[in-house]
Image 1 (tube, rainbow, N blue to C red):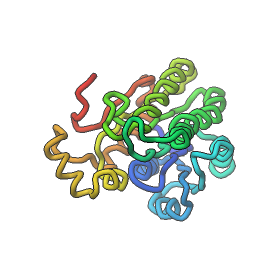
Image 2 (spheres, helix red, strand yellow; image 1 turned 135 degrees about the vertical axis):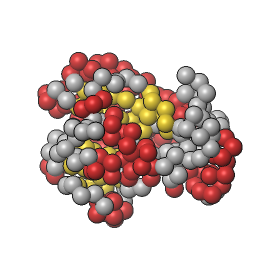
Image 3 (tube, rainbow, N blue to C red; image 1 turned 90 degrees about the vertical axis):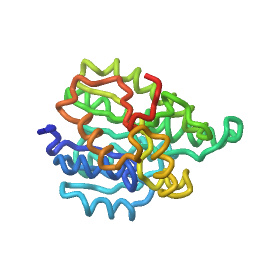
Image 4 (cartoon, rainbow, N blue to C red; image 1 turned 45 degrees about the vertical axis):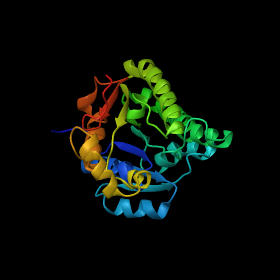
Length: 250
């Protein structure tokens, strides 16, 4: 299937590992020119070597407002204006509902709500002028069903969905789509850290997940690449689960 992404400029935040890396690689396979952003430029360089199309690696901390706001401009200097924006701004530390202190709440808000806002604010005007744009937010099934012990993620990801759902309605007539992916359990370093090991996560998935396995990062990348494509032009304002049937609520 031709996705119409050849030579489109995509910015993928959190591209150094896990799902962000898989998304960047999937977009690269479809011919997009990919800007890779994360804290470690060295880690990004490893990812860039595996992508055949034009890439650029840009170090950024999503907790630093000025750096985040300037990121799309850096992409434009290197590859051209951002046409595809993938918001994968990381996961805050686990904790019970009342455990986190105000500083941790503010850090999670900056990463999961304010950073997506600043990036969208920088990219949407150009997308509107060109009459085409794609924004995909990497979230969690917690936006449908809160996950125990992940309070900061549960609360702030839900806030981001509210922001982006509102934006989706405002820009739909401009040829811009805005969607969120509600992520289930995937075989990533992040899940291994939360579960103790990837083997423990696999074992739990066999009994907890209807598909009886963890998702593969490349499966995730393929879904996001489709949502970024010409073929997905009529899909917007949605929260799309990819979780092997784990989420029970509609």
